[in-house]
Length: 640
Image 1 (tube, one colour):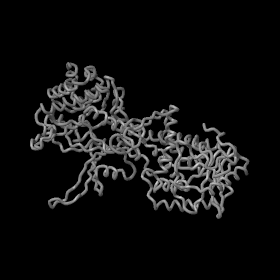
Image 2 (spheres, helix red, strand yellow):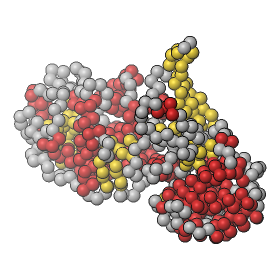
Image 3 (cartoon, one colour):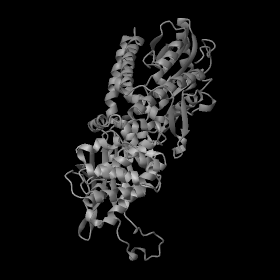
Image 4 (cartoon, one colour):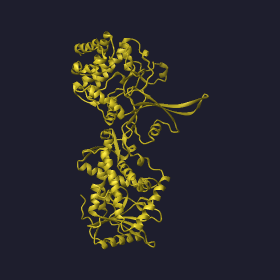
């Protein structure tokens, strides 16, 4: 709590600048204040304090004069904090064309503290401390109030961000300090549009970097205090620019997005009431100020609103890919992929009826070569985590009641996907590369992997059926169906065995997939070895031994060391692969190949538990009895 006894005496002589902001945070303000102006402002605030019989706790300049966008006729904006000020809050307008014009916002010290800590005044006063201000008396008081306010802003904005997607609470996402500033002022600008002009002018132009650094320092103090109080865990992001990105774990209970939005709307409405109350008995000046702000709001259209103010989430940093959001999210992806001079985009819906996935092909004509136009072309797969697809997982939970449980929330599935792709690849297993993440639109963009679904190969191995599998990259991406590229039972079984080995490796490292249907695995054919490719004497390794396997769907990825969880992954793959199949001999060969691969890294206990009767029951309506029997017998008889 900030002490109410920081200021001593209600009047001060001299230029008033005895305590500028504090030794650790002194800033060389580009906009200077003359000694004469400083003395005049000191006279004004002391006269106001004397009129009300109050002691001055602190006062400062804020707004255009400090942030560097003042006009020649701009007022001085003054925040004057008084002790035991009975009127709580009030605007006092001073007009003296021969000296200076000032707009003094007078506030009671206790009310200011409560506004900082609990938004008592709708943040109408405390909100000004988000931005640069120049203390003219007892700057340490306002410094402490600013820190108190910014601590609450960090907690609230981070809680809202966690509600947007739980991935932000992991070490995969780092947050810059300016995120808290822009996220907060975007909300304030929506409800208090007149402020947009000052926000844009403060954080664009020649003074933007200076102003940002001033605000950032206050947030840094607040962040360190929250850490000292044990309310957050804080870690500097290793790849951060100048250490300005942070991994944060909030220990406070989070509030939902809906509740936070309602609270912000209430505060905004209350701020308008406080503004009206503060301007009482100064109606003419209030009308003049309102007209001025309306004019400024129109002027702001002539300036470019900073992208970070329009979409604060683009400030976030993820360990792989970039964060994109807003209406320009595809432009941001295209730029990241090297499309600098425009592009065309073609979208194709792909996957099964439950999928919410698109193949996006970006193209740009780069010039002429040999009389033909050359094109830059990139294909990405965009996976949307929608509420529509959520119905699939709800239905599966009903179907598998008492057997397995799947994550339903789009946000949780999106987090699983991102973490799963990276954790599994860290084991040396191929997964699609993340290009971009959008928290607001709930999507992840991956680089396209051109391969053959393992499900198609199993169909060719075990026999024809009536079930329709999509040829897809594990995020249900359309493929060209080149099953005949891998001829012979031995070649096909080798892929099944290799997948078994990969799944065993995943389990051995404490992870499970939960959704192990074979269409989530791609076989990517490698080109045959050509000695001419290495005629330069390079030591490159020719990848001729086998084709590559990619695991491509991680919506249900999780950590687990439970053998039953591992057993479900095994059973799900085996039974799902053999839906509608009739060839028992080939089915047995398939199961043995998979288990031989799995046993290289996986647990024999997990294999044994995969024979549980409860695991085949969900698949029973679509399976031949003889195939079920063959699978269970092979599992039970298998010896590592």
